[in-house]
Amino acid sequence: AAEVPNTIAARIDALAQENSRIHDAECFNLNPATNVMNPRAEALLASGLGSRPSLGYPGDKYETGLEAIEEIEVIAATLAAQVFGARYAEIRTPSGAIANLMGFMATCQPGDTIIAPPAAIGGHVTHHADGCAGLYGLRIVEAPVAADGYTVDVDALRALAHDTRPRLITLGASLNLSEHPVAETRAIADEVGAYLLFDAAHQCGIIAGGAWRNPLAEGAHLMTMSTYKSLGGPAGGLIVTNDAEIAQRLDAIAFPGLTANFDAAKSAALAITLCDWQEHGRAYAAQMIATAQALAEALEAEGLPVFKTGGVATRSHQFALEAAAFGGGQAAARHLRQAGFLACGIGLPAAPVAGDMNGLRIGTPEIVRRGVTPDHATVMARLIARALNSPEPAGLRPETTGWRQQFDGLHYVT
Ligand code: PLP
Image (tube, rainbow, N blue to C red; front, side, top):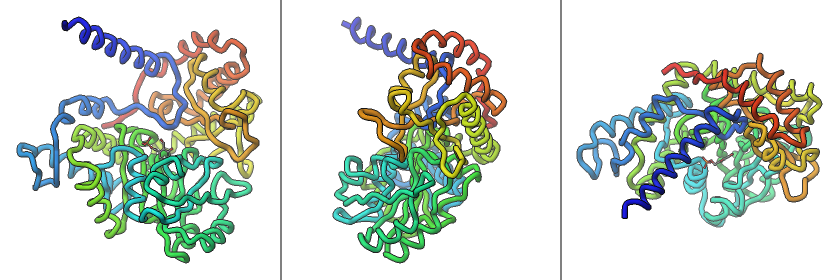
């Protein structure tokens, strides 16, 4: 009778190994929405901490025997606040998507209007009607897009805000090429009595590393994020704020609102991740940006259509290719997958591609962790260009995987 479960368990083991082969040996992962964790954090995630229920506040838990876990929780939250220069950090946040829901709940009532960036500038579905903003009953108005800049148009946003009287304005996207007008948007929010939420799901590492100005310091009331993208931590979310009232509401939303017991292993892994940021965050963020810029330049030299605003491909760790020539962003991603490169589609303010996205997003969080530097950009760009232009991209995989072998280290200090 144990045969079937054992067969299934063996299959799961084999699939995990196959996943490891794809990501740790065979392919370059150019998706900025992913990363590799510090092995020490990885070990803690698998340590058994996570199977301990932990309901309530440190010092006042429902279950007993949680003294050690309580300290981990406090350390993780303290580190999160420190790394993001914030007074409050909410770590009981299961994902970036739920971070946004919690942010919406802390600032809006169902029926309120919000202004959010549209998909053409990487606005995320969680801010839209199909995502948690819509599910929570918010009315969503799309922010106007700047004519030359992958962000919102400030003057048009001001007019729209006065017209629609939003309760909340959001900034931040799934592709961020240059800094968003946070201070200007906060001024608009103040004029109409709105809150400003900065979604740093992707940019949190660049912000933690000081390469971009901190949106909280610029005036955002709260900042949400994913912890496993540029931050390189466990799958999860995080919210930081300097506003005591918002922090209090987030606290009640986290518990007893949306979470009861939560994962102490994730908190431990996050704490290790944040120690890394304190030690080498500046160097890592700078290297992510330098490598993205070098790769964008090298891809352009290969004749590929790098998307630019104001003549610049990126000031960030991510950039995009216009994907119409490849049948769309997702089509290009599937093509690259065969050649050993992982990436995915994104929206660009350009002509649409029927049935697909019109951009291909490329980012450097994972490849930099594995040791790719600007010096490798020319060789990598050549491989990517050959793959995108080849009718038989799978034929290139041995070459990609062969070159990939030299990048076998993970660059962590903690
Ligand atoms: N916000 C933005 C801008 C994103 O790109 C994502 C991506 O997934 C999310 C929120 C949701 O984050 P998570 O995947 O952690 O739920």
